[in-house]
Length: 88
Image (cartoon, rainbow, N blue to C red):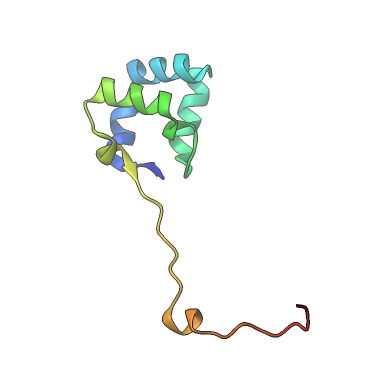
């Protein structure tokens, strides 16, 4: 999961960045890098960061987080038979 564009715009303010830097124990410059990178399961998606973001922006978790695409197995792939390797 990573932050939505709505959450990113609301998080990228001096007040929120300052609070996040305290909770995550990182400099504000590092928080800015986290916002720019917006990595899946990155530091901004941790419980402490999520609490700060919720309290300071009024956004819900659903409004803050963007789910990662789920990889599904196609029907043909799921019906493949196991290969006999000769091991029991």
